[in-house]
Image (spheres, helix red, strand yellow):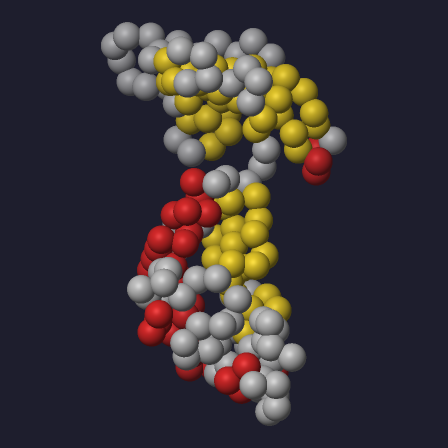
Length: 171
């Protein structure tokens, strides 16, 4: 089946996944080439032309592009008191389906991420529910109201989880 999976050799233990003939783009390596990628046990085993791996699930990827995991630095995850809108679990699953391996959530949750307590609660939920790497921004002001600054020393103690501060859309 073109562009889809094909079973590897019959019998025996599966030898990972082989993605054949994809255009592999990796700016960090200066790479832009048609290659095969072999993954086994969650690790890249090979990246070359003409890889042969009997027993691997083979995905014919001619005409497809293969890139390193994408990063979305502006996502709105709700959970806490607004789980009916989105949760960490549903939002990060959607991100993973789109090829994103890392997301950074905005602090406009309810309650907002404007205190050590709220940030720590958010981090516990992230550790429990996220299916991709999840980092967060914190509020610059209490309640995202643009008046009283939050404790930046408390934010600094929450690195690397907290990567930035913003009131996200509020002046």
